[in-house]
Length: 58
Image: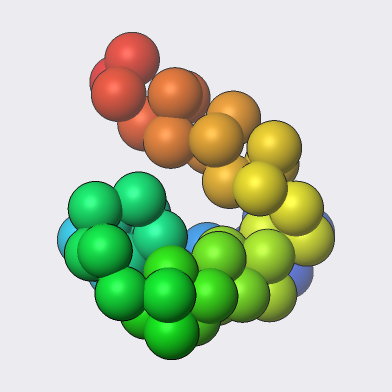
């Protein structure tokens, strides 16, 4: 049974792609899209960063 109380985040590879878009793409449109996708998925860039740090520790 699925635990509906646990927040479901996008797959880690997709999150990493959004981070790449935002930081390394060099394209302002891609940077905005990556940032907006992260904020939509996590509510803030800080929460996205916390999640990524947690995943790296695993």
